[in-house]
Image (cartoon, rainbow, N blue to C red; front, top):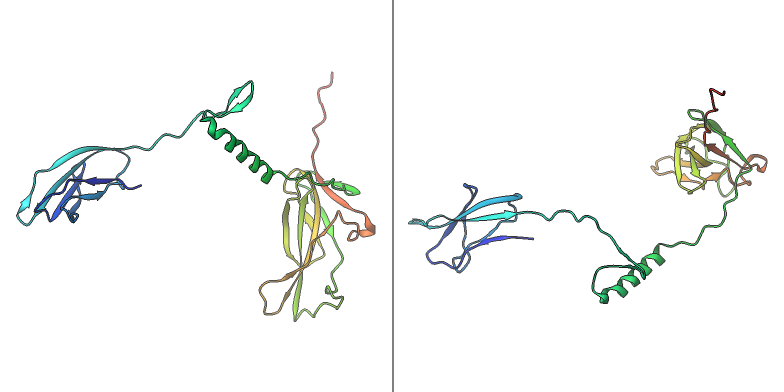
Length: 246
């Protein structure tokens, strides 16, 4: 918001000089059509300042007129609260605002609420991984395209793999490695929890910069696991055993 330093209309004025705390900040402000001053003071720093103005023309300057100007921002609100009453929670505002606010919160709740997700099927086996340890994930080499044709020769396209893990609890996917040219990778879990491992294949054709990436094969899917045996990785270290028994 602009804050202006202004004067009344004046005659015989061709310029104004503005000072702040004794320093000239605008030596020749052009007056308005009626000879008045309109100077934008919103750029002043916070605090109290002594502002001065004098009018001038080719013959000289008027006396310097001063005023004290204070620029201060409001403090941050604190102790925001709802007031609890026997009838529930109210906000200390006009009763005309209560129902619109109730309706607003109802709309927000409906927009944010999601139906509970269906139960997730746990893998057949959980492989325990201790801190600083890893498990080696392996898979068969991809040899075909989605239309069952064989892969193009290496001179025409380059095949590589991407490895990820997915939180069994939240479904969040975390990339572990990309552009892998072998058919195995040692996986170190990012943090404690249970994870599903996944691999995708990507084919980069010669002359292209963006590869074509397959769907991710997850270790919870029996159709892509060896012998249909699903598995996951579990990084949930237990407590140390008691000592100093007596």
